[in-house]
Amino acid sequence: MPVGAPPVPAMFSAFARPACAALRRSFSSSAQNNAKVAVLGASGGIGQPLSLLLKNSPLVSRLTLYDIAHTPGVAADLSHIETRATVKGYLGPEQLPDCLKGCDVVVIPAGVPRKPGMTRDDLFNTNATIVATLAAACAQHCPEAMICIIANPVNSTIPITAEVFKKHGVYNPNKVFGVTTLDIVRANNFVAELKGLDPARVNVPVIGGHAGKTIIPVISQCTPKVDFPQDQLTALIGRIQEAGTEVVKAKAGAGSATLSMAYAGARFVFSLVDAMNGKEGVVECSFVKSQETDCTYFSTPLLLGKKGIEKNLGIGKVSSFEEKMIAEAIPELKASIKKGEEFVKNMK
Image 1 (cartoon, rainbow, N blue to C red):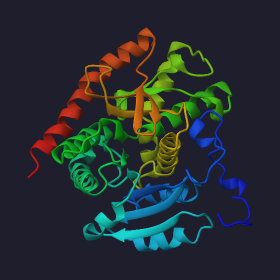
Image 2: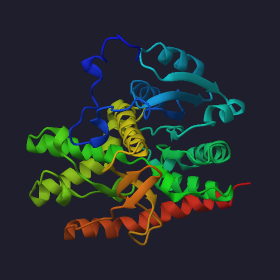
Image 3: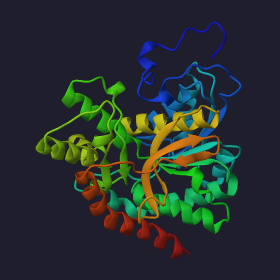
Image 4: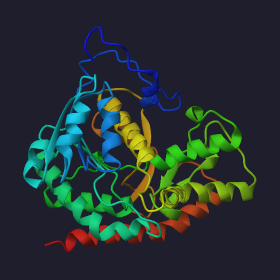
């Protein structure tokens, strides 16, 4: 922001969340706050608000926006905002390499959204092709960047991204993330509502995957500690697992969760960039390559660092109810992972 410019209005201080280290920052050195971030699928329902939140952050110095339509307009609009990140739009496959060159972080919300009656898995055929194509471009033009996949079904699009990177010989499992942050955001908010707490001070780890019963909120590890009778706990977990469907139904055919997903995606990117800048103790859950269970990919809390995942913090101590949920999730997760891997094997 230029010297002497007014402070960012309070209405944009949504990221002053005490419970989330990434969204509570003092900026000691502007030299560190130079992340070059690309958004692939920037004209869509998630891409536009996500790009707005990234443009508003002092952590970001360059924002490159890619899509197959409307990106010059989205970029022109965002470029008028009084924050220092430069913004440029790129349109169509021939401009994608220039969008990616020199990027530190690439966020991929590209793909089609769910409509009423659809599962995330129904999106597979369309979104698998989109993610594979974009992942191949990242592998070629910014192989060292952190890759954050929002495009559903995440349980399959992360294995797809990994297999594409392997094909190009540049796969680093510490730099490929399935963004499951919205599950944590929802869990925090729903628990806070039930207990009359400030959601900014609630932190519920959510492990497993990012669809239906593979979403496993670990309420027993919530801070502050909370207790629910079993019937209320079952209803709460069901609501967290089906919260995406709740939004799809409420939008009645006009889309899926876009604004809350943009918030969650921005929260994850800011955590990642903070860690890349050397901030210590930054923890986020994400769906990544894992040895925590029988599944080759699994979401758990991760300690983030300068080079991506510094340490997988694992599942930790869980209740017998949560253990049962993990056991029930694994077959579905394995099938989704296999589906993604097979898709890349069979690609021409």
